[in-house]
Structure formats: C-alpha cells, structure tokens
Length: 265
Image 1 (cartoon, one colour):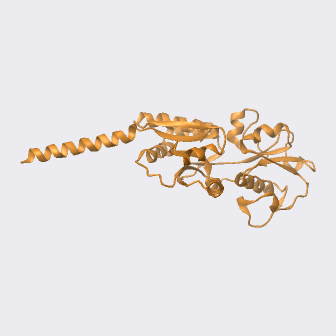
Image 2 (cartoon, rainbow, N blue to C red):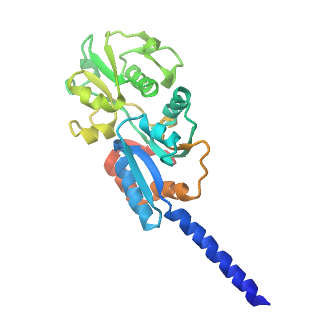
Image 3 (cartoon, rainbow, N blue to C red):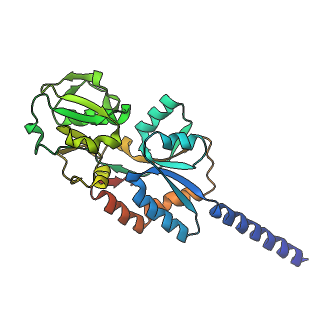
C-alpha cells in the first residue's frame, strides 16, 4: 500500500521542482538608465550563475522606463527615487509602486570655471534639473550653498516660484537632468549627478563644490513594478543578489566611489 503513496509523493516533488525551474527559466526584464547599468550588469551575471535569466533593457531618458513598465513590456525598472515616482504617478497616471530599495547617491554643485561657491559672480548662470522633483532637489542644494532662500517647508517640491531671496541674482536655467553634465561648458555652476559625470569623463565626480547629504531617505533609488505585479520569486531573488552579492557591491563601489550608500541598510 505504501508504493502508490511514495509514487504520488515523488511525482508531486518532481512537478514542484519543474514549476520552480520554469519560474527561474522565464526571463526577468529589468529597465534602467546608463548611470545605474554597470552594477546591474554584474547582478545579471551573478543571477545567471544561480539559474535566473535576467535581461537588462537600457533607456536613454527618464520617461521611457515608466512608459515601458506600465505597458507591460518590462517587469521592473530601476532608475528613480520615491519623489520622482510619486510625480510620475500623478502626472502620467502610471499604476506603479516601489518594490524594494536600491542605493542612494549624492548630488553636487559642479563648476569648470570656479573653485568655490563664494567665487561665483553676480548674475552667474546656474543649471538645475527641469523635472519637478530633481529640480526641487537642485534648489534645495542652492539654498544649502547660500545662493538663494526658499519658502519654508517646500522641501523637494520646491519650484522657481518658491524662491524668496536671490542675493546674487543668479540666472537659473532648467535642463533635462541627464544633460546637465554637458552644460558645464556653458554655465558657471550646475547641479550634477556623480554617476553621469563619471560616465562623461570630463570632470572629477568627487570635485563638486558642495554635495547634498545622503541622509534624505526619500532619494533612495527604487526597484519599481506595476501595482498589479505578482512576484513569482524571480524579482525577489534578483533584488537579493543586487543587495547582498559581494561582486555587485564591488561594482557599486567602482561605479559610485564613496558617493553612495545602500538604501536597504
């Protein structure tokens, strides 16, 4: 009487193993941008060693990753922090949600013309990001530098209309965030992202005249999925590899130097 039971148990275990294997062999599609790609590429390699197939899809702008995710053409994206996602959901109606935290990066004020904030002349041309969230972060950084004063309490939602003092009468130019590094030849000062500056290779990413702090947890980059996404274990496994693999940590150190911290610690 025991043999049929054993056969049934064996068949059940084989089916379970087959389903698990099937889940791992299905390709997980992860969207990102160039600044975050190198460590993710290492995570993809480490995932492959564990039988998890991951395809990295790289975008050149900050709109396509959410459009593509919302359309269901990728499973997850990794390029945005919470405030950016909040604005994307509000402005674009994207049904997206954070899944797990990644890293948090410094943002700085860079110049090719001046060695200190105090050296900036009156009427200096200053470039910041043109999207509502990263622009607000840039304005907060200019306030930290003493170049302007914002209305109390506006935080990362600050806009140009929230400037209440501008003693040096700086001219603020709004540009797409990924283009700011290219503007450094044409402006006196620019908000800069060290990972994009490192990719451009034209300036020392550690050479900002001022950095913001990385204690603001709202700026942790998030793995983002659709609101109806049901993880079958593949994404959780990939995130665990990204967060805890020594090889990925080495790639993060190489990509970001000391200008980042793990947002999950």
